[in-house]
Length: 469
Image 1 (cartoon, rainbow, N blue to C red):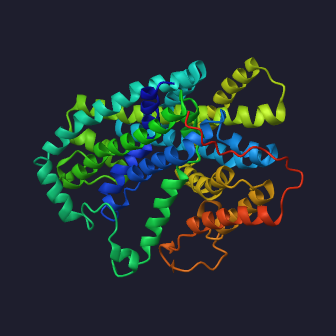
Image 2 (cartoon, helix red, strand yellow):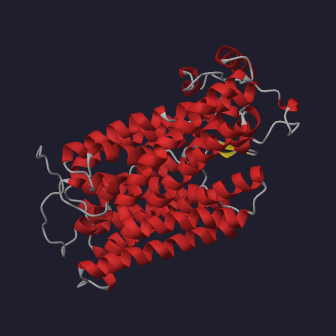
C-alpha cells in the first residue's frame, strides 16, 4: 500500500464518528471543557509512539496480525487467550459507532433507529466483503475528503451565528471554567489546585489509556503491516498521528460554537445534551444544504471506522484462530473465504449489539480499557524482553485483570474489592488503578519469566530486528 493511501486510511480510521462527536461533547460540556478533550492529542501520540517503537519491529518480520507476535513468542494457546480482548474490542467498537450513528440520525431526522443502523451496517459489510483492505483504504480516502469538506464548510456558518470566531472564543473563555486550557496546571499534579483535587489522577489515568492503549489494536497494525516498507510504516504512523490531531479542530470549533449560541432562539428551545451538540449545531446554526453536508461527514466518519474495525476483527479470527487451531493446513482460497465469512458474521454480531444493548459504548470503553491493561504490557515485553515466556505472560494477564477488576466494574455489577485509596462517595475511585494494573502486569511478566523459565520453549531468534531496510 502506498504511503499516501496509508496516511489517509490511518487518519480516517481514527477520526470516526465517536472521535468527532466525543470531542465536540467534551468541549461543549461545562463540567469538562477542552482540558477533558483528550482523544485528539492522546490518539495522535499513540500513533506517533506506535510508529517510533512498534511499527518497524513488527513489520520487519512480515507478520499478518500483531497477535502473531504473541504466537511467535508464547505459543498458539497463549496467543489465543490474548486474541480474545483484541477481538472483543474491535467488535464492540464497531457496535458502538453504529449505535451512535443510528441514534444521531434517528433523533434529528426522526428516522427509525433500527433502519438507520441496519442500512449503515449493510453498506459497510458489503463493500468490505467484496474488496477487503483495498476497498476499505480507497473508501477511507473518499470519506476523509468528505469529512474535511463537510465540516469545513459548516464551521464559518456556525461561527457567524454568534458574531464570528473572536466572539465565540471570548464567550467560551468566559463560560467554561478551564477555558482554553489544554492540559492541567502543574499545581494540579502537586495537589495545590483545589479545583482539581484527586480528579487529576483520573485525568492522567485516561490520558495514558488513550496514548498507550491506542497502540495494541489490529486496526492500527493492519495499516502498518500493509505498508510497502518499514520506513513507510513508520512515516505513515507519525504523519497519521499529526493528521489525526488536526482533524479534531473542526469538532473543537463546533463545540465552541455550541457554547456561544443562544439555544432559546432555536427550534429546540433549550440547549441540547452534550452528546448531541455536534449534530444540533449543524442542524440549527447552518443552512439546510450545509447541515446535510456536515451530517454526511459524520456518517462518512462512522463508515470509515466501522469497515476498518470489522475487517481487523475478521483478519485476527481467520489468521490467529481458524488457521492455527481449526484448520492448520488451509489453503489461500480457504483463508480468503474464511475472512469474508468472518466479516459477515462479525458485522452481523456488531449490528445486533448496536440494536439490542443500551450500554454498547460502555462495553467498548471497557474493552479499550482491557487492551491497555492486558495487551500493552504483553506487547512491550514480547518485543523488548528476550527471555519473556508463556509463564510470565499468563501471570501478567492474571495480575493485570485482578488489579483492574479490583477497582470494580459497574457494567458487570462488580463492586470494588481491593482497598484502593482516593475513593470519593460520588465520583468513585479516583486512584489511577487502570495504569497501576498495567504497570504491575508489565513488571510481573519479566519477573515470573526469569523465576520460572519455560523448559519446553525452543530458543527462537529475537523479535527485535534493527535492520534499516
